[in-house]
Image (cartoon, rainbow, N blue to C red; front, side, top):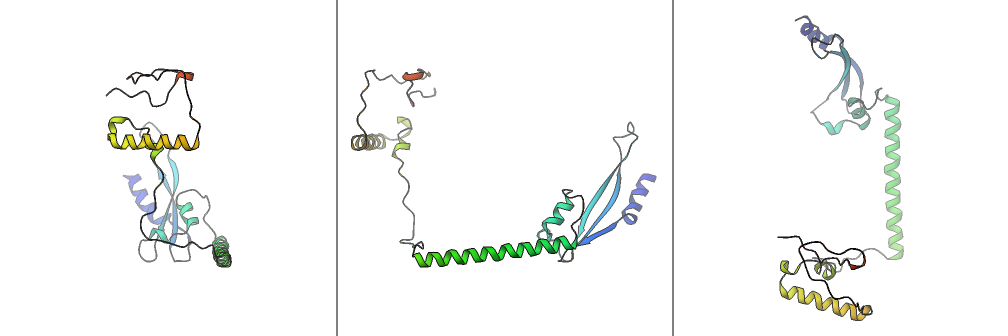
Length: 193
């Protein structure tokens, strides 16, 4: 019972004000004693508890990153007002630099006339998928699609590449993997269904 009373009293006694941010949120910490692993462990641990009291509504997005790191224990010391002012000034400089670079880029595009022009509104033309479709087994597509794919492949081979003639007869389709090295043919093996 005395441990419980000590904990309740500790909530009010050991609370210490750590700092405040520019939006008015206040940050606190207290040292809290954590019981050991039961009756077999005689040592008690002391851990620092950290929390924030919001000025207005509870809005976690109003907490600066440096204070979030302190609350989560990623920082040992709380950010100082000088550090926060320096970081705010740095953020403003970065925003100004980004705005300046965007303006310079727009002026450059205007001078060169290379701005993107939208010619039509709607769906864009898709990529060429005939080489991708031919890797599907014959029973997953209709015969017409397979024939069209074969015709497209043949016309592409005739136009762009010399025909490759092999002296080996084509291997039959089997349900077991076969071949290795030079006799390996991609797409010849199909899993048993």
